[in-house]
Length: 446
Ligand code: PMP
Image (cartoon, rainbow, N blue to C red; front, side, top):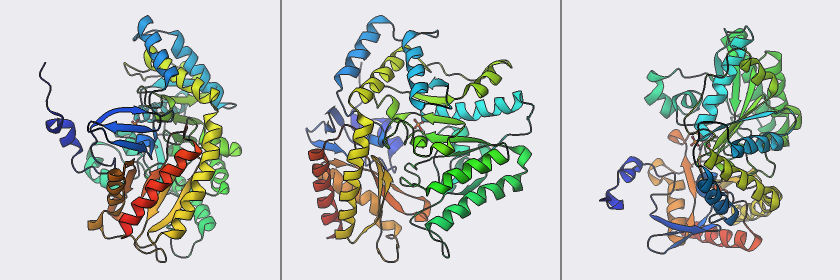
């Protein structure tokens, strides 16, 4: 077999111009919160890849489970014990209001599954006029066309719009770039009211669901809304018979300190939740849609769920998912995410106080973002040519720190990087992360 040289690999060309991931690393191996490139240089996982590697690298329990399952059976299109165990564990961790987990292979697939289950539920309930899924601007829900249709990103709409039905968007309750005349709280109220206005404008009988990230991912930079926003959204959805879907692909699976981010707002639980990324923590492609019996039973009773992907729920990925969840529970990694999150946020705020270009620090647990500005007083961002957030991630990379950065379309919503290390991170490792970050900003600001 002749393998192409890595530098000539099409992968590089596909990713040319896509700087958010921090450039193309030639990765060799990893251990704990570090990975090494093929030149032997070490990098700290400042963003857990794209908020994925919650257990860090080289976890022995996961590796043993992987080998054990591969020795039994890796693939089956039929029922397998690890898949059953995984779904039970996910539903149990999701807690009251959630009875069933449906396994998939990733985040976009999970979003597609939720949209389709919601639609089948409406049809089975005699509400076949309901099909519109309202979503937020900005927001991100995945790369497949159904998920892209609910993604709030004008750049993608322009390119892919003709081959999908772009769904209506309502504003996301930004906390830093709050429009003139509002404060954080009144803007969150306005955003919740915008959902109601949009439902009425669409015709309430046509609206199927509202999808949102309860704690934002990379599209909003770890946006967290005031508590009242969540209960208002829940009330509005109830008032108009609209299903509430939480996209927890990035914020779920323990990253914010609870298994679901939704658990921070127990009076505003959604009808459907989707998770991925941290569920198998990078050891396998895996995701899940989590649903209550009332929805699953209705769809099951009217011909079954018209959805499936070949690899969804395969035994190998499932066994890996089980091992990841067991490790997370045994090591109290959600507790650690909470504790280390408080520490990290404190240190990031101190960095902001010392820096001239950190505009905002926000997030929850170990899902945080650091917003970069040219002027802290006016919140003005750097000119596009500077590509400031990508420049920060390049400097960090030179210093041995990987950061997942993002500049929003035309800079309208700002730019940031994710401060989201693995959930296994220790206090001394947080100190090392902050040393590297402090040096990164010293270079960036000099
Ligand atoms: N939703 C959110 C909130 C995400 O962050 C992502 C991935 N970044 C997705 C959906 C899509 O997941 P995947 O890339 O696994 O398809």
